[in-house]
Length: 244
Image 1: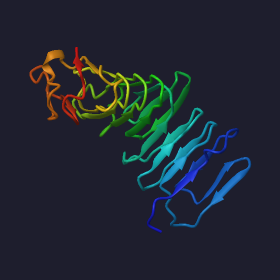
Image 2 (image 1 turned 120 degrees about the horizontal axis):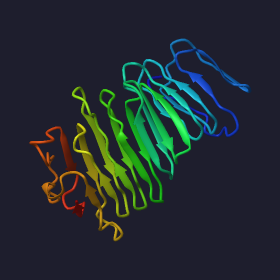
Image 3 (image 1 turned 90 degrees about the vertical axis):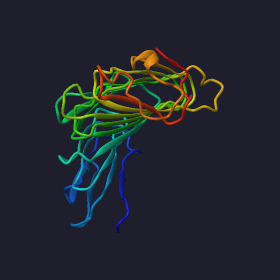
């Protein structure tokens, strides 16, 4: 009908699901089969707590694997994305030019094929978001939202010459730490809250130390001579207090 449609299996906790949006008939698991009419396009898939295999179609798809060791297959066009919300630690890393692995709390691993856009939302605890090995896919974009807690964000980017990764960090409340490698080609945008009393010691590490101007909100290239493809920007001036 022109809207955005979602198949949501998050209520299932004991079985894995296999859903392919390019098919009109899906034997989802031992207890469920779903059919739809030819020409129907479903945009979004949400998995359950089992080991799911979720495959997209020709439109832009948003996947949420939830718990379990999931396999998520986007299209070769590279427009598909994942979104996960967990009070947990996340690590996203490239395996090949078209595949990445998302590890949650060191034990749960999702295999991401042709997924170039990643949104990861933390919780009230002190979460770590590690993208240090993510960014070799074309238009690779990571959106990290820390929410509560003293979170640690480790930025990524591309180590070659073809692409520039986009890293968007939202710290939320708490004293957050941002760790960078200026040798990686990346555009980094930091959004920090300024309204919380427990948000007075946000720190940047590895972005050039005193070369970073914390008092402006314009894009900066801290070391343009040695690292011309590393930029950093604050959505609000004076929102981060320290740079080392």
